Image 1: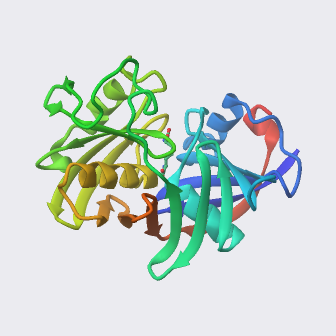
Image 2: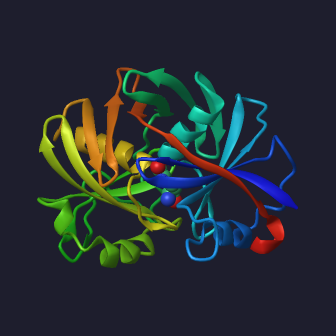
Length: 270
Ligand SMILES: N[C@@H](CCC[C@H](N)C(=O)O)C(=O)O
């Protein structure tokens, strides 16, 4: 079966986007998703995004990490999908309904409300999620936030100095996190500015993580380290994050289309 795809990215966090509304797709197995995402033998991406019809929104977005696992939310892909669809757009995800509108500095996404309860992160057992009494070497007392998907955030003096490629996988797979976790290391540089690096669950180090930026901004606001609107600068560039009066997270930033193509599904085990 020949399948059309669009290659897109948000700040270098890249996606292969398939549209099940345009033509039928093969079964979306873990093997198929990870084969497509493989940068040596596949098309290569951080996430496979599949669009489909929705009965509650304008469209539905399914998200598969590079390891093939299906997950609930992806901030950067939300902007990419909104760019493809046009805004305003209401997008159904496994993590909840999100809304995209055109913003002065790119596309704004209402990512919904953050959750902080230990079993909403989720953690394996009850614990204070604001200052978690845990440590992995020099990374200690993180905060945990669920913004549709699970994040743990460590505030450090210099996030560039953290060996995230070594500690990220260890923390991601710690039994404390029954659904695994996205690992964020952040440095607050001003009341409205944060630097961030992310080890993404099911992917590894990425150029940018939209939900990581949201979770980190909320974690920093909750600790009183920053004001209610901040610029979070990732290796791929900046995102503006606001926690508005209604308690909702608004993420604003760019998205871009890279190229379009087709592939034969049999080349990827489907
Ligand atoms: N790159 C994304 C996050 C994708 C999902 C994440 N790896 C997870 O497993 O939850 C973003 O921009 O938010």
